[in-house]
Length: 306
Ligand code: GDP
Image 1: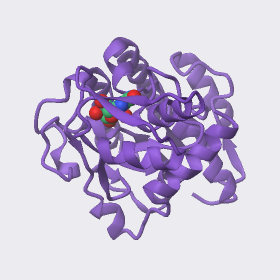
Image 2: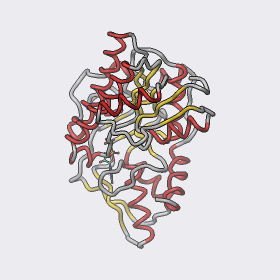
Image 3: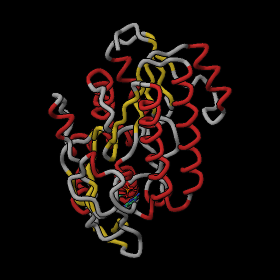
Image 4: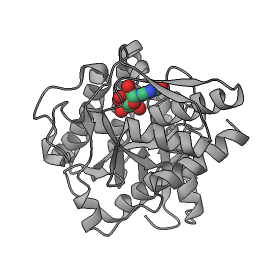
């Protein structure tokens, strides 16, 4: 990419898409645009957008997402939305000779009982986690679709696999959010209403790798500029924490003094999701924001805006 490249962020209103758009602006890219009100589920509208704008670079960050409960409640919506949008954008990127496209997959694309930390070569080596199987299959389809266009047409379509992203502007809704946003909200509400306890789902034992949203956006720009290989590349922070540790850290950041109760009737989901980040590290990329710093920034934002 250079400062004048025409860049399309598909899904500019999503959590990750808006952060990518912000990072591009901050880094001085001048020719950026988003969905412009087009319905990305409609191939003819997507085609029109590509014809009008003729992008050289595409960040594919569109498609519905959600936490463990949303994945269990809306598997069809999540799968359909991600499949159709991904097909439309990738096909149009090919038709309109896009120079490079980054497809963002998800760490839930890895098998449930994957060897940890998860290396890119572990994809499709075992069964998926049932709580998010539909979404994961759609994400795997996106990985393979990018690869298929590369094989058949020589398209420079790359794939990034991010860790669990969190930060300002995340979805803080009660049921559908991911764990970081959910626990910030729960603990903040408990603090301001003087409640004595907060319920955390599951056993607290699962481990997740969290990446601050600005670091993830930065990693997306970095691989767009520095990575051209057919194999996916992990985009993580390098450290996994148990949900228990996460809950304790959020309690500290929020200043909630009550107790934490583990609701073991709720699902744990995948036991561990920890990414092997050697590939991106070997290319010279490092995250800048620690979990605690990221949580502090996120809570400050939530208190003011959320
Ligand atoms: P996952 O990484 O796809 O499992 O997505 P989540 O971010 O939704 O959940 C991560 C882990 O946090 C799971 O083990 C959840 O059971 C656990 N968790 C604990 N409390 C909550 C909560 O209030 N909301 C969510 N979404 N997850 C929670």
